[in-house]
Length: 133
Ligand code: TYD
Image 1 (cartoon, rainbow, N blue to C red):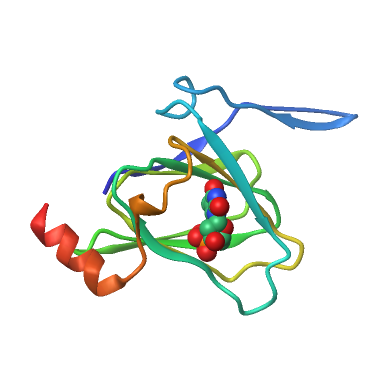
Image 2: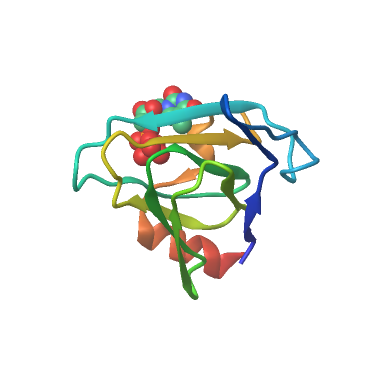
């Protein structure tokens, strides 16, 4: 599965913490877009889709959530709870974001501009797409 947890450089001192990342140095793509998800009510889930070419990097800036990845063969689950550890997610993976703690902020960096054409939002269609490719 084209995915990995990436630990980011963190600077901690008495003033607090600072974490940074640079495209192509810490994450394996150039960032064209970012978005963030917050205010997720208890019990709600996000995503539930796959992407054909998009690469993404998920960071729990605050709080925690679970990402489940699925390549149509196996599933992997990651509890995201550290602001200096993100999850790289390559193309061709179904993702579900669940179990958001209160006040969670999920930052997502993306390799492409927004394009609805790159989404597969139906799981049966995703399985079909994976069996064709
Ligand atoms: P949606 O795909 O439902 O969010 P999630 O992946 O968190 O479940 O996106 C919600 C809406 O926002 C949907 O109408 C598409 C729109 N959107 C954009 O216009 N640009 C973007 O970069 C993203 C990620 C979503």
